[in-house]
Image 1 (cartoon, rainbow, N blue to C red):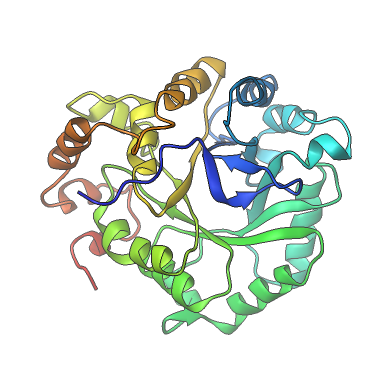
Image 2 (image 1 turned 90 degrees about the vertical axis):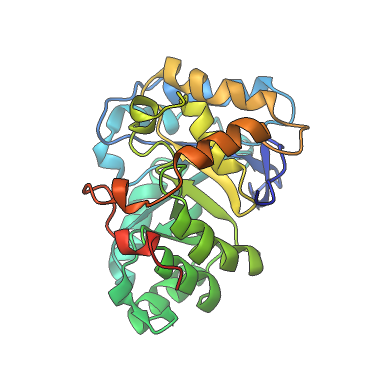
Length: 302
């Protein structure tokens, strides 16, 4: 069994401007559903009423895709002081500096206008690499973001764990967004995660529920919170991203996480081992279904 991460609810490496560690559960915008404007407030209130829960961490892609959710996000703080106690991340697929600047200004409109805690260069693909490091266009985009006073952390996301390994080893990124769940684990655990741990680069895990398919298809039965705990159990994972669709789903996912802090891991050994056994074997059996852009990474360790 791999080394489990600490059971704390707050992160070690990502902090707000005021110095507060972020919550290890980040609330994201869901493009395929209409999240109510009350959802960001409920998330904030849960964390503020709990002990050592970490600061609210909001993530959104193109803000025009979910206006109700963003209308709530933009009102979760009142004034600069409250804003400094929260963490906001957004990003875009552009690599051109002018396009990045435009995307940044778009994102800033929903988090106070002064700064964005993290800008994510989204969906980095293999062709953007030059061997085991970012190609010139991608590296220029990373350097441009580092030069901006309005961006605190520079991140990148990818579905490819070979790309993730290259970004961890050969770039000056502050953090990575990498796909990881109990049904898609071999590539992460053998290719990208070891390098992220070695370089001390925090990972924000996404698709932890595999688009809510794991809760429907799995046996033994798992909950959304189980999916999040499984991801948090890996030492590389600093934060899990989850796009709850309403307040009930948020509470079902987030509240059970509070039972883990103070323990050495997020899930019991027996349940963790059961899930790893159930999802062991030939991962091509489930990767070859259109859900994975890089299925070959799950059957080779290079």
